[in-house]
Length: 284
Image (cartoon, rainbow, N blue to C red; front, side):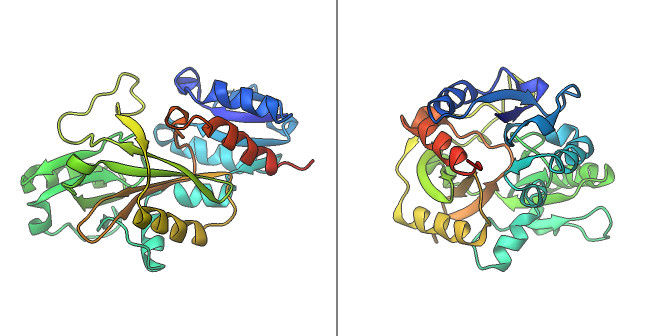
């Protein structure tokens, strides 16, 4: 038996869990849904645990990181715990850039340093957020308002948060963001995510911003970029590679390896493919 891991706050919010359990059952794998923050769960009873919708981790980061450490000692965890710990902080983007993978141009700021974002940078159309976060929680866009942007940067830094500042890539308004879902190291299907920072973001759950998701066929350049990312990653059960359009081709906005929505409704075979990928990782 395996566990599909959610959070108490998200247990009834993930539409992928029910079809995934059904598809796993057809693969001969029994799966139960369990919350990472449920202290009554004995994780050692599971052959493996697959994180799926732990969408509140950024609100309880220390406890979540400790849970990963303790749970990985008693069962097999997917994705691998070291990879997930690396992926929890978006400063991983620097590591991808160091390997020649194009990312959204990003300035990283640390509360331990005296550095500050250049005023000229903040005076543009910019996005500011903490490097640890999920569901667009706390992400703010500033349109040529350097003072307001600096105040938000300072608020995050003073709260002990690491900060990232990125230009707003306006092409997303017309072309959307492309996400490519990778299962077992293979790019399986893609989707389009509509721009969410064109106005005030909304959230009916408090955990993530409302998004418009539709099917998409990834371009040759997008598929090639996804393959470059796959090549530098260790073995994974799943990954979601999100990218934004620029005049020079797509660039990586995020590589999600901990709790990405896989948006089963954009591909009729998504649940079946995911179940097969998960089953292939089990010792049987």
